[in-house]
Structure formats: structure tokens, C-alpha cells
Image (cartoon, rainbow, N blue to C red):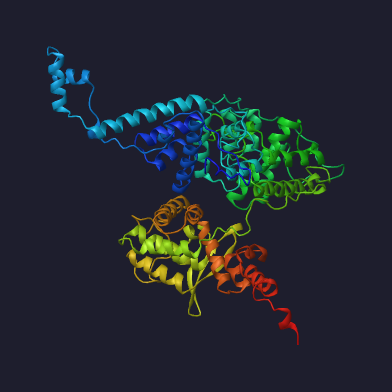
Amino acid sequence: MTLVSSPSHSTGATWPRIGQHHFAHLRAVAEGLSIQESALRYLGIDHGHQAITAHRQVVDRLRGLARRRGLSAWRLVGLTIRVGTGDVRPSLEDFIAERDLDGWTEAEVAQLYEEAFPADARAERRRRLRDRQLALLKDLQSLAAEKPSPEDRLEGWFDPVTTSRLAQAGLLLLRDLQQRIQGGGHWWRGLPAVGRVKAHRLAQYLNLLLPESEPLAPCPFQNPETARALASPDAGGALVQAGLFSGRPVTHGAPGTAVLTGARSDAEVIEAWVAARAGTAPTAKSYRREALRLLLWLTHERGKGFADVQVEDCLAYMSFLEHLPPAWISRRHSTVLGEGWAPFRGPLSLASRRQAVVVLGSFFGWMVNVGYLPSRNPWMLINRRTGDDAQQSMLDSRAFTPEAWSAMLLHLQAQPPDPSRARMLFILGFVEATGLRASELVGATMGALRQHRGRWVLQVHGKGARNRLVAVPGQAREALQDYLLDRGLGPLGQQPPETPLLARLGDPAQAIGYQALYQTMKRWVREAILGSGLTPAEKDVALRASPHWLRHTFGTRALERRAPLEVVQRQLGHADPRTTMRYAHAQLERLQQEMDVAFGEDRPTQDDATP
């Protein structure tokens, strides 16, 4: 994040507004703090070149003001005046007290003082210049420093790029951003190119501008019993007992329609649907969450239940998901049982909103099919298409670039051998060549590894509780063989069937969980990327990596190396080839090549085309 914009008269860019924090920055620099450290502390800037640019712009702005005011010392603004520790002399009073010279005459004290601290003309001049510099900054601060107001527009306090990104999310004033941050949770969701780290810096910088925050409105979901109810397996029934909604009985179906479920309330039908259709625990959690959120909204905002939902309610709920009120978003650092809980952790991305609508459409269709609702599904009567996210770059990928991948391998190979290094080398080599999901990797055992016609395959229990066979090519086999030897388990094929592929560091016979895999990968990736020669932009992308990036890396590399699409699809376990196509960049490269032939430098000229 950059604080200020570069002045450009041709483009009409404005000068930055000057606040108290700018003078705190300049005083810190004058006192010896580096520009980069001071900019990080007072300006919210972490990139060195941006810090230098911001510092120079503020200095130029204040020098210009000092010249217009006729202040002869204007050149002292931003001037580096080094006063060494040896240049500092104690005051005469401190000298007398330290030496116990109260009974001595003034002349005697003066003589002793000069003998102990002989005058240094250059040091004295530096001290006088420093005093004049700090006094000048104080005078300029009284003249130029503005106090930011919550009603100020973001322009001037933030750089144009950050301002544009925030404006795309409807944040135009400092108050808008303050309320968004105070909403808590993952408040940065939906902001283009803003992740957790950048969001933290935005919040810190805004706190410098507006240190006095207004109290938050009370959250309507702070009842601990409500939070406990949502955390229970029978969340719907528990919420009824907590009094969050009535769970009143409904009239089932149209006359003569058979009811195929025993559910007698909206809360009960949610659990019946989850039990009937959710095949795995993560799916059950997702289904229950979306249905309960809708029921909470219907109860609090519309005074309705599922049987009363009309087309207008569906459209209103879609609009609600797009613009979540702050009261519906959990406060920062709140837990499920903590104060400030709300149904949403933060603003929803377009993908999350799309998923919610798909789940609810399926849920209402199921309720119609079992006769819980009349034979109509209002979600089928509206345009549920949300389109694409205009802020999403089609070139963005969650696959490691070849440069980032090389940086990680070089870092690992340069480290002394130990169990953690061996495990990380196995993870990179094995998953890059197999494309396993993180859950499939941590759940795999040696008993699932078999030979088929001289080659190795691994049976995994994948997404949707479906089994599939995954080819284990040479790179993956070698990575596993090295890892087994490092664990002291002997050559491949000599391990007990229950031996996990991925094990704990202290116990090669015990599997690790996803959280341990996540933390291991984040630690090694961070060390490798921060110490690499990648550009700041490349580092910023790579540092966001999670274990799932390894699966994307496999898909991207396999298609780049011309593996057939249907083969990659089967290896990944995708039901739809369009999902696999997300990893393909070959079509884009072919498009670029063909267009260069037609319209680029190599296109045939008119003379070439003439027979």
C-alpha cells in the first residue's frame, strides 16, 4: 500500500493531504530512524522504494510551503543531520548534580565543565541545526497539518491504486472503510488484490488517521446460546430452543400430495435434507450453513418461513448477500461462542454468493420433491446467474510459477538434512506429479499403493466419498522412496499396509492432519520465497500459497507438457472437463501465436501476398 500519489500536472493527480502522522514520520527520521522503518510505522508503507517516494513527496510539499511563508530555513525540511552520541553534552545543572558540585563557584564549575566536555564547533553547529529543524517542523505542523475527518474522501489520504480498489467495493469515505473494518471478521473479502496482510496494514494506517473509533452498534446475534445452538449437530432444532426463530409447524404440500419426510418445521427439514443429501461432513456443514442463514434472514427481515418464500424474497436475499449489513458480520477475533458473533465472517465473494444460490435452489427443489412445500420452487423462477467477477484476473493462477518452484527447491536442497526437510521434499515432488488433494494425501496409506503391469497406482478415497485410482509416475515414486528411507522404513513395498504416506516428524508410523500439513508448507514456502531473488510482486503471490496450490501446479504442468486433457481430468478426479480446463494455458498461447501471425510483426505484407 502506498500512502501518497506522485504529483503529475499532466494527469491532474492531486498532492497528498498532510496530517499529523506525516510530521511524526519526519521527526522520527530526523532523530535517526531509517526512512523505511519510519514509513512502516507512521505511513503504513512496507515497500522500500514506495517509502522513499512518499518521503520525498512530503518533503517537497513542506519545503514549498516553507518557501511561500518566507521561512529561510526551508532547506532543513528532510535534511539528514547526524548528531552522534558523542556530540551530546549534559546540561550544566545535570553536570553539577552528577559531580556533587553544589558548593563550587560558577567560574569553577564552568572550568570543570569545559575540561570534561571540550567545545566542538562542528558538533555545536549540528545540534543548532537539529534544534532549528525540529522547531521548523513544529511551526509547519501548526500551519499545514490537517486532522482527518471520517467524512473525508479517501483521495489524498490513500494512493490512487488503493483508492480505486476500495471505490470498486463502494468505499468512498474514510468512514466507509472504518465501518467496514469495524465490522470485523474477514472484512477484506471482496476487495480486489487485498489479502490478510495488506488488510492488516490498511487497518493500522486508518487507525493512525482516525485513532478515535466510534462505538459499534450492538450485534443482534450476541446471545451465547444462539452461537452454541449453531455449533450443535442439530443446529436447526437447537436454534428453535434458543428462541432465534419460532420453528412453527407448517402445512405440508398440496392436497393429496404424499409427504416423504417426517419433518414438521423449517428447522427439522434442514436436518432431514442434510442427512439425506450431504455425503460428507464438509458438505453437511456447507448445506446446513446456507439453509440456516436463509432461515435467520427470513425470520429477522421478512417474518416468514420456507413455505412463504416468493420470487421477491429470493431476489431480496441475493441482494442482501451482495451487500451484507455490518450487524450480520462477526466482530473481529470473535469465536463461535464469543461476544459479537454473527452468521457471516465477512463480505462474501462472488463465488461464495453463487455457491449459496446454487445450494438453496437445490434445497428448495428437494423440499418440493418430498412434499414439504407446494409444487413450486421460487429459486427456479428467477435469474440466478451472477456472472463473472469483474475484478478477477483471468491470468491469475493458484499454481506455483516455474520461478517460484525453483526457488523452493533450491532453498530446500541448500538446507542440512533433517526430517522436516525430507518431508517437505516429498510433499513437493509427490503432489506435483500426482495432483492429490490435501485430504487425499494425509489420508493415504501404503496399503493403498499397488503395482499394475510394472507401474504403481494409488487408490484414494476422494471428494464425494468416491474411490479412484491415481497413477504414481517416476518422479512421485522416487520422492516416496527417498522419504521412506529417511524415515527408516526400508525400500518401497516393504512397509506395513497401515503405514501413512505422510507422517509425523517424531513418529513415522503416525499420520499428520491437514493443519500440520498447512503449517509445514507455509513455513517452508515463506522461508524459501522471502530469501529468493523473485520480484516483490512474485513474492506477494507465492506467499499466499496453500497445500491446494500443489494440486493446481500439477494440473498446470501436466497440460503445459501436453498431457491429454482426458488423462489429466481422470488423474485429478474431475467430473467435468471444464473444471480441468481451468489449468490450461496452451489455448491462450495458441491464440496469441495465431493473432501475431495475422496482425503481428510477422504478418505477411501486401507484396508477399501478391503472386
